[in-house]
Length: 263
Image (tube, rainbow, N blue to C red):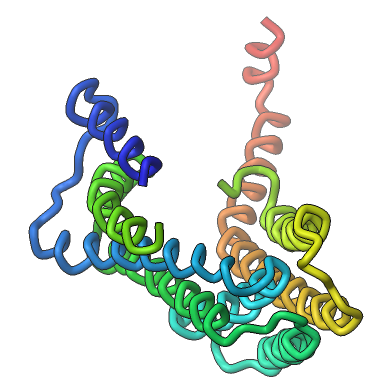
């Protein structure tokens, strides 16, 4: 709640007071149909996700995220077509989660429902964000996004609290593998900090199988993205290379160009 309030306040200063970023044209219809639901799903994902920690272990929560988030984002957003390799990965992750669920010492239905509901809300939030950016034709930078979404999220997160008390130059592969390593670190720290959070042999086997499936899935996604980028860049690269070769040949047979370069 404090995070959303502070982010909205700083975004307001940057846009309205210091004029660092220009605001976009936001109509009431777009705000009511996109921004408000995005904020509501964001608050729901936070509340349900945090409440789940009161009922199930950190390790089991990470495995549920690995299964549901990957599957939902592939299907609901329509980023994947029915493919044998993707289906095999989803099956592998599902088997791993089932094994880890069976080996969970303190399995709790209520906590599992909370976590799954929070993940569904997060997936829907991402879907609506994509709709807001693409289908509505808005160009939102991070500051504009906070300017419109954070103030709306503030009271919604507050309601939940009162109820319950860039990929840059690093590369996509590195970021995604780091996410998997983060899950393992969270699982390991949970067993050290919370002695009651015991991990059984079946837990470890299930986690390993599920994480292998997630890594394979992410590798396929990154490979597909790189293949599409190479296809899109192949024609301009060829034109650029041909132009450079023609320029070199013309300079070679043009003595005036050589003399000017020496001067």
